[in-house]
Amino acid sequence: MDLTPQQFRILERISVRGFQIVAFPMCANHVGVRRGNCAVLLTPVASGGLGMYTEPTFFLAGNLSARINRKGREWFVWKSEAVEATQELVSELEGFSRELKDMLLPTA
Image 1 (cartoon, rainbow, N blue to C red):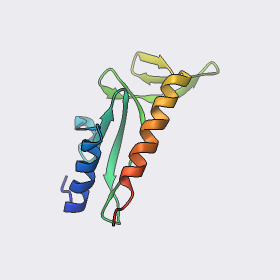
Image 2: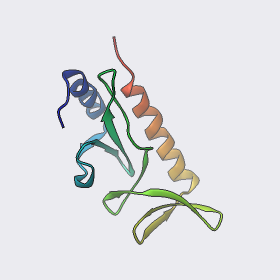
Image 3: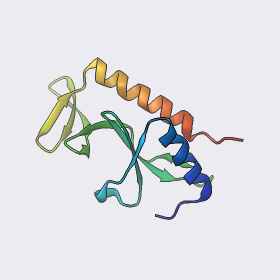
Image 4: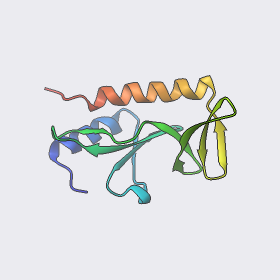
């Protein structure tokens, strides 16, 4: 994936704030970002910056999980692995998402 200087600056800003820039081999056309148990894929956007390609999710068994509803309860799943979407995990994910969105906004 070719990135512009502006996109590299965004990734540097994200990295300085404690997020890891990671590669997910199954998603080679996107940039992975991770902190703690949270992860998301970023993609280039028309404005020249980066945007979220996926909704932020729980990092499970080394992969991006899917959030599902099973028998009235929310879960993060990856293949046979599952973790209940407790209020604590959901709050962690919301904080991750909010902070990352702020860093993706254009700067002057």
